[in-house]
Structures are given as C-alpha cells and as structure tokens.
Length: 275
Image (cartoon, rainbow, N blue to C red):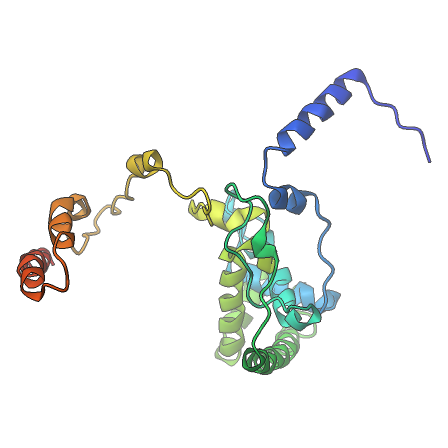
C-alpha cells in the first residue's frame, strides 16, 4: 500500500462533501459512484451496435452538435436498460416489475423500488416467452445492421447509419430500438436506464414524488406551460382555473341522479361551446 498524503484544505473539503452527500437520497449517491454495469446479454460489439443505433434515433451531444446540453440514449445508458430487460430472469425475483410504494428520492427511508416483485406463474411463462422472442430479434437485428454496413455498423459514418436505420428493410428493428430507447430514457432508473435521472431532468419531470408528494405551496406556484406561438388550444387555458363549476358538481351525490344531472349538464354544455 502506498502512503496517501492529504493536505488540511483537501481534508476539510472532503469532510464537507461527506456532509453534503448525507443530504442526498442514498440511491442517487450510489448511482453516481457506481461502476458501469457489466453486460449480461450483449457482448462488446453487439452492445456497441445497439448504443450507436439508439443514439442515432435519440441523439445526444456526442451524436449531434444541435443537441449540446441535451442528453440522449447514450447518456441515459439505454443499452444497459435493454441488456437488463433481456436478462431479467438472471435474477430472482426477475427484473420485470419494480417494487414500491416509493423510492428514497423524495423523503422515503429506503429505495423500495429497487426490490422487484415476484411474478405469478402465468406471468412468468408469458414474460419468458416474450423475452425469448426479443432476444432472437436483437440477435438478428444486430447481424442485419452489420451486414447492411458492410460488416460493422459502428464503423460507418453517422449519415450512413441513419440511411441504414431509415430503410424499409430495418423498419421493424428500428421501431423496437426506438421503443426500448424511449423506455430506457424515461423509465424509473431501477430498470437500468435514465442514468443520473438525465431523462427526467431534460423534460423537467420531478419523477416519483411520494411519500412527500406535492405540498400546497408548490401546487399554488405551479404555472401551466403556455401554448407555443401560433398554436391554438382546443379550449381556453383559463378553463382549468374555473373551479366553481367543479365544486358545484362535487357537491351533489351521484346517488341523487336528478340533482347530479342538473349540475353536470350546464358544465358539459359549456365545454362543448368552448370546443
């Protein structure tokens, strides 16, 4: 063991960092310092093909200069999401349905989503069949992309990769890659994607907010996204602020059908007029 020297300044800074780390959810700190997950289904080359293909479909800053500051499939670790999905039954319980009721990202004592839910026998049979088909599709799709690229899909320029993916011959595999790419971008990170919550951060989504939820002051401060210039909403935006008719409707028992309809019909008529 080599001796380690640590200056007073670095020591004080490190202690301060430890204090800050205690204030972050354990799962987030663990993910930040975790080593890249070893692949279980893909080998090095097939993982590279899937990485490059999904990055063409959902590009990030390494894939398109116009995406600077906007993460894509590569940054979200989509290939690891797909790899874990295809090998879900390597673990017990299988990595199919994340548990709950919540994580530790917003005040939970522990990350309960990291414990996966056991499957019923019929669910296990169905998922084993589905994943078997998906593994065959990925093996065949990767071979097809390599063949179309003259041997190695990862070795051709991005515009050539785009042309291959856009061809009718690869349409089914392209749709599969895009579907799983979107899942890996925005699903809860316990499934292996959305690394560092980059997908949620990009779209301004707070993620699972239980058990703390949304306090009243946060809801009061929330402002709806305005419509883009030149786009007309199907009804005025302020309709969501008209709470009086809703309260009137809620004040009637559905068991009293006549009173319920009397309250509901004017509200429905107003909605049709706005539409």
